[in-house]
Length: 163
Image (cartoon, rainbow, N blue to C red; front, side, top):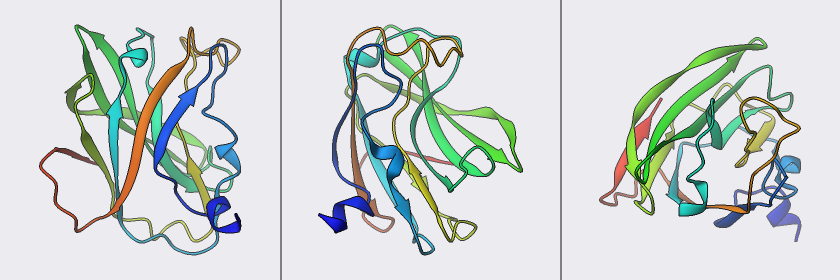
């Protein structure tokens, strides 16, 4: 049980209707530098929702994650296609997102966290959704994203996105 509290966990992450986050994962903290890792991602058709902003897939950051963090997110473009983006917070300032590429619904891809040395103590940041920048508006329906964590050296034939 203790192990699950402080590790990244593979599985299906659900953002329930009218909620912003995928469970109580905001308590997931770490107390040592993180080795490089990849996150395998599969976007479910339930994530096909047009919004004005980037929705978080996964990230890593300081305990106060709006001060310093590295994150990946998505924008649904229509026609079963997602834009994959990276964005960061540095010294409390949001750095504009950067487009990394596109994937289709149910198409597996990886996001890479190579340089985690800046985070000695921090948090894992799990899927999060807010409609059009309004954190009072949660998901319009249940949304699902599958995440699975692998060491950086495992090679699988899938798209790879890196900051």
